[in-house]
Amino acid sequence: MDWKKFFVAFVAAFGFIFLFGFLWYGKLMHGAHQEVPILWRTEADFGNHFSSLVFGHIVMAFFLTLLCARFVPAGGPGACATLAILVALIYAGADLITFAVQPLTTKILCGWIVGDLIQFAIAGAIIGAIYKPAPAHITFVKERSS
Amino acid sequence: MLAFVAAYIFIFAWGWLLNGVFLKDVYAQTPNLWRPQSEMMSLFHWIIIGQALIVFAFVMIYASGFAGGGVLAGIRLGVLLEIAAVGMRLGFYAVQPFPGKLVFYGSVSGLIEMIIVGAIVGAIYKPATIRTA
Image (cartoon, rainbow over all chains, first blue to last red; front, side, top):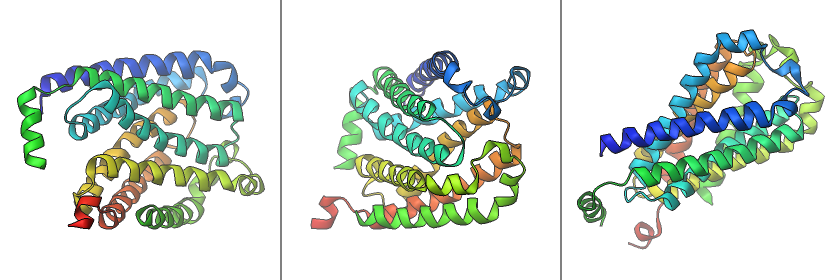
């Protein structure tokens, strides 16, 4: 594995996921979330738990990068975006379950699912565009797997 | 298809046992975060669809990049996906007033769940080249 490219891809993915999350879930969906205020922490309490949000995004970005690097050895935005969309479907499944057990509105559910799909597709494409191992390494992987 | 059905049956049974039985008291500590029982039952089909989507995506990811690796490859994929899901849980914990132990129990049980799902899918799903050989 090319760790230098991996690290750059991870940082780029984290930056994008965090920024997208802030804009999509924090700004664009703010009104929808406020329809069920009982479900959310207060502003001050959220501030106290902000480190969990940052750490959670680091974990998501790291393991998405790892998944793409290990299992799309040739890299490329298209292949990594496809893999990331499949990962987003797992999150979408979790969103559906959350909707069944928590008093979310359908607007929030739809926003979360669409957000997951866009967020992961673009993050995967970014990782695939950055993490491209040297051609010699790709040949080696292909030879080994054949 | 067989891998999907077997993994789905497990995930459904595990979800019921964990959330409906073991963690029932922990959920009861934050009743305003959850729908009433009757409302949950009326939306139960979303749980079924959600779990099916999770298993479908898992099997698709396994088939597209892990197939042929057997049980170990399935477990490895399960661990990777679950750790990414822990990230998601931490994100929810930051914005929703869950008790910390619910995140901890959910993450530990999620890890066990995904390891077993990975083992089931890895044991059952064989790529076409291996099946025909």
